[in-house]
Image (cartoon, rainbow, N blue to C red; front, top):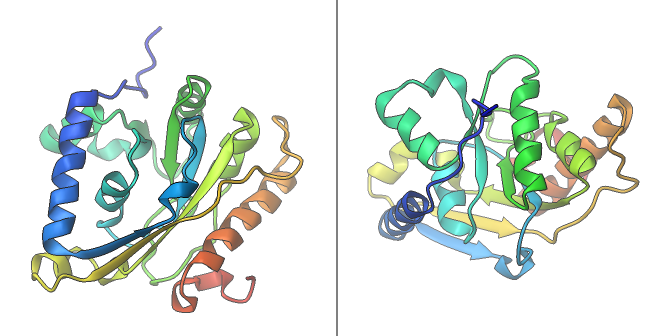
Length: 221
């Protein structure tokens, strides 16, 4: 049966949208990308990133030269523009506010096929300007699929989307860290193990961010 949560990306559309995102960022921002050499040559792996504003998804899209499958809120699924765009990009629809096992299974299918999953372990956009407490989703996928995690730290996007359209050309930084495997990864990891691994993921991201963006992990680096 066709999984309703999973759409294969249209690679031509993905390349087109990525090209437009790269041009817009070049035109409207001053973006620095560090650590591209740390990206594995191929999947499967999970990209784990912080999430500060609406700038983040196009910034990730423009910065990482591989097709990334992301999660999208199911509330946008039937919107004419956003829904069709996210389907073309191969997004996995997820129901917010609950444990959506179907979306997790879809993500595991992508990883099993050698794909790349991108997600923010915080589970939502930070309204504080710093890291929120991480949720166990990224740790669950990395354990279950036994794949690498690639930490990606975003800085400067906390200024928000309006600053981009005010033509102030904000300075944005994308830092791609070294990929790593979770220690003692176990497909049957219990919640205590997943929480410990989530703490490791979040501390890794915090160490890559300026102190003012480390949020609740400021004292844990």
